[in-house]
Length: 443
Image (tube, rainbow, N blue to C red; front, side):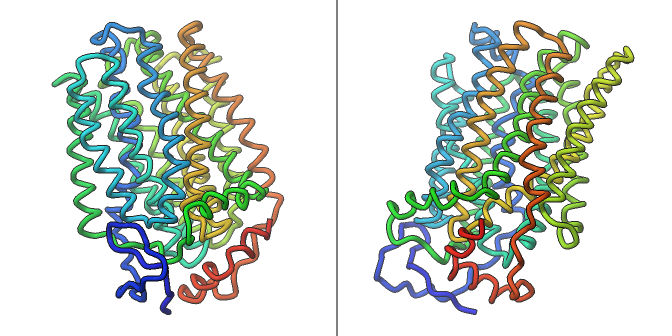
């Protein structure tokens, strides 16, 4: 089925009222590798250098608490970026926004590598935060090219299952690279990866946003449509608490691993590599179960597993089992919980109104990063004052329990009735585009 769109050149913004010769041409689905790398680049940028964070603090002559803002401050930057990039991708299109993000990201990564002072490093790190646009835009691209929330959740689960290799490998590669060549080499790798992904976007990605707002102001005014939706808030808060647990763990483990278990940077990276294994299993379950179980049920089950995993670690530690694997291996189940929650909650949030997929993705991402930044800052300060594994686990448990409540709302509230055209991709896509108000008002 052909859908008319507001015209847009491959690079520039749409010009209202001017027909585009390709406006009736359906876009190609992006390649799986392109989606995976777009969704992964922010995770790599976020945590590749974490095993070397103490070395960076020493080289710049600053405290670990200040240097940890390379992590938590980055989250604040990407949160602000997502509030802007989401609506931009809905208005200008996915492809031009992606290209712009990488044009800024590549020299910023190079600047981090070459920074002679911590002030210049943080300035370049701020510019690196623009790459978050790749993540939110990749989610919107999936929603653009899939006919329903269930199809989008399944496709997103496939992408996230494979991309879980990136956060599994990034700390490992980062730790080994820092041991061999110094921490600056991590940012050289980010520069090369950014250039490679930009090449893929230019070569393989068509514009997928075929229905756009007539003005950017109209796009910004669409935010209340999402903020008035109870299901959007439930999905968004589930994501926020879920990611907050992971971020607190990431920022705390380099300090505790060294202080409590005398682990090297490479050993910390190797142990962190176990956590995403459960994430991949959870995503595999979603790909199958989403066709049989309600999305809210999957989210709720994932949240219960998350609580149980933290309690399991606490139980083992209370039995005086002091092996470092006690802290890491049970968290594979935390990864399982994340694998169940992230694709279902993300696809649910951006499916509240398919026409606002980019805006919804940006809003969820901003909430996630703002809260993640605050939680990691609090966690870093608390662990500096009381450097204990029990302190870390207590913070994680509180967040896990808080995340149960929005998940329970989703579990008790029936998912929106699927479109009668759900089995027909063309018809379902047309229905989603032509009736955004109906989708928004279901809540």
